[in-house]
Length: 635
Image (cartoon, rainbow, N blue to C red):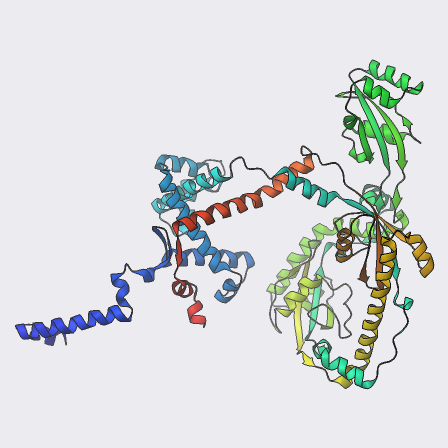
């Protein structure tokens, strides 16, 4: 064919025909898509950012590198579909677009870094240093090669990274979280409420009449999906955790008592508090003279005025012993058997004389005898932690040799447990939560993502242990018939009716409490018991679930509310609310500020980069993005 074309082009007629043919071909290419050749190779450009661009190759390399890192961290293959569902493709694109935008801004600002400066900065990076703390050229070369760079290319890339960091550092330099934000978080964390409450049992309202078959059928038809049989899985598990292998009986009463004394104030109630005022004197002599005056009948407030002290510096308010910066002062204050004055206590800041105005006794929900079993279990779990690691390695060795889970357990002296039917909520066939299901929701989630015969990774327990599991069988979900679930439908109707009646009753009581009637009177009328919860904060408690605690703080102090609980309806009254005074210089405030800084900086940089990209203009080639991640092929 080529020889024929050469011969045909030897005379002017042949050349004219060839020119016409080639012209038609060129025009066709331009019309049907190869015109990119004449428009700057746009098929190789994934995104345009101002005068810069993100190439398909650069994006694909960054995407694959990140995907590989995630797979190494998770120790399993990640498909492109999973990566896209998690948003990895867009995260990588956003990062590359940001880098291109910042590179252009650096050029606009005239920022530059010499090779010597870049090399000095690289040499100071710990990742490139050897065991002696000095720059290791071989290590640097290896890291650059692993990242797919030549040494020169890696240095150039890092030079741009340093310039980008220079811009972002300038944007966030000197920025601190606002004091108002810190105070709001302090209030949210430390607000403490006292709650009086009663439980309204279902028996408090009249039982609804028995529904007819027609009513039951109608109820079933309207809620058919509610009575659908769930998918169940049969599981074999092996648990190795500190709490599972610990031996509480080996813990001495003395060790349990010591732990109880350490944690009782935080876990089991409210510690003793005292209303305290104190004056710091420069010398012991001045303190002793002032104490003598006070004991002789002098007024404390008058002495404060005489010394020209600020009452806010003198009044500590209601404090616990642990609130004192100097332990000796706290010990002296809490050693008083009743309100009064302490002897001068010498501190690095001077001699301190304290006055205890009132005492709020400690209130504990559990005695040592009641808490002893759980404390023994906790201590035993702490002592068993080293054994957990040994057993984990031994079981993994057994599994690696091809043994089943039961065989591996037997080899290390443990036993597996079989759960015949577990649904995706961790319940059994009766819809009841399976007690002591190891790793709880985490195990259920993993089991329902697995299949029969799959060799699964372990699931971590909250105390640092491990759960091995096998899926032995799967019973598919199905729709139950009305006849199968008729008794359950009747129970559901009765429960709904009781809850509605109970909610109406609770609303009446809440209205009474909000109008000023004491909760004790309401409880007496209903024949129920008033209970009190002290020092309730926005944190987990053993006596209330999170939903109840949230509701406690959705109601203003000296107001009432109600919420559904397992055994009926809880009606509560917020008796009081206290929050410690906010101190911006306290350790807590400084810690909150440090915790906020990363998110605060990220928000600020996000706004800056967003404005920069808007000014430059960003265009995304969606088709090229899909092709780079394989989304086009998966359709």
